[in-house]
Image (cartoon, rainbow, N blue to C red; front, side, top):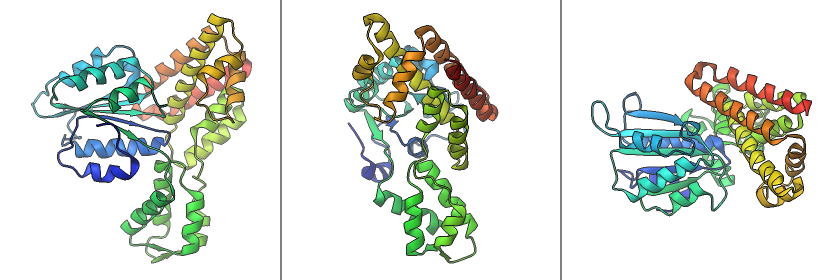
Length: 344
């Protein structure tokens, strides 16, 4: 079914039943990825409160082996009925892409598959698997444009019976928009602050809404690569204030170290400088981040990168096994990585 674009998503979600059972949801707006995955799950017809019908997996548990995912998709529920398999934190796991290929070539089964991924470049195995299959759909999630942001403001404030002055709306648009989850949280905080009134004024926005226009895990990850503890803590404070999950930083840090591992392997194999590895494997990086990544390549050796990658993977698995300690596990792991980077 190829791709469902952002402006098509709401109409797609209203189709009953949903036309496919395999969903790849990806993009740089991680809050929007989570939000749309939850919307697909709610529309799947599966009882989300039934632990026997919903299976949540971390992509790290699948790795390069598609068998785990295939087993879950082909399993029969304890009490029958439809099942939902929900995979989170995917990146470039070969096992997930291979499983989608196999599932798409078979007859539709009783299970729905949702795969949440961060940003994916065109031509990646996961995107190709979903976009080429008639039984799968890829749903990209990019930062809200002006029209989508205005709709989000109207939706959240109308739910509380609030109107907003033009000057306040303009100020709000300037302040939010970097991440759907962060933006929605700021709007709900503003609505709670103004509850009982009819009109939101510009001063209300200035008093209560934090700067969520550029909430990004990249700032925290860049500070980690530089070994900048103070910069990392400042970036984390901004993320926490916006109510963006710290886990997203942990996930992004893992993806960054996986990329470093690939680049460093190419450097070692071809005896090439860091700049050459960046030219071939780092072309998709934002120009501002390239010097930071290149310096990290020069200071981290392959064995150290592998150890750090394994530690980050273990932390992600542990945070999923003990969700009550997710923030603590993420912070301890990330701080340890910052200190490791500083020593280099």
